[in-house]
Figure 1 (tube, rainbow, N blue to C red):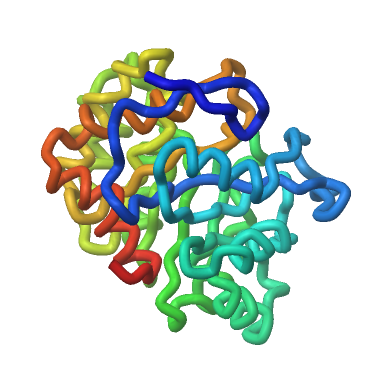
Figure 2: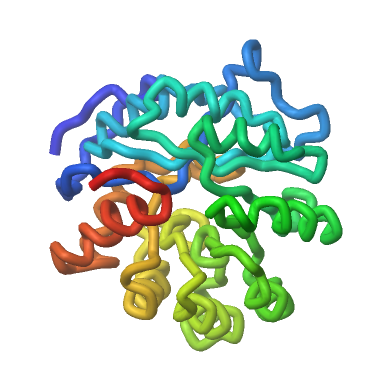
Length: 287
């Protein structure tokens, strides 16, 4: 294994696994720089700057060619940092925005023209909890004719109570980070059984990322959950780094996360689906 200067200046290794051509990091963020793209006044946390150049350095180290930049709550509904990054590499990047019901058709079209293909809502308690559901419903109504999807960032405890609402959504939906399940409760826990039921639906996609959020290094406790999701939905699972890992206590080397792919999807065909074909289909990349 060789080391390379990372996006933060700390030496991190290159992955053992060689990702197939056109592989996509389907969940990552850009933060700031704050002097150019200020953070939201009502944010729940203030991250260190992680601009587009840092994201590109990460992907160069990992050997990933595409990315889906997910708007994080620290920037609120100001999507400019994300849009700036997409404009920098428009053939390789797509985005997921945070919007509210102040976004009219013109504003939504500008996001679409800028490479956005979905909206994200946080239900996670430490990020402020459930959104105003009236606003949520109005946003969903406005995007349903655009071919966009909604990304749902949930706590595991919310999956069962929200499952009926999720099933009624008129747009495809994506569940972040394997539903942030508690790995100590096993794959038979009600929250994960409910997530598997959702994953089998034609309109549901699940990100088998966030292993570093639901388990400790070397992240083996997350593997049974990721494998079960890939088995339940081989053509609608996605993978990402979650760079730069906001609100994560312990540092993580993204090469460790990429190397998990060979354990999550052991076959070459499965790896290509997870990293290339599935994100290309959802986000409109040309394979």
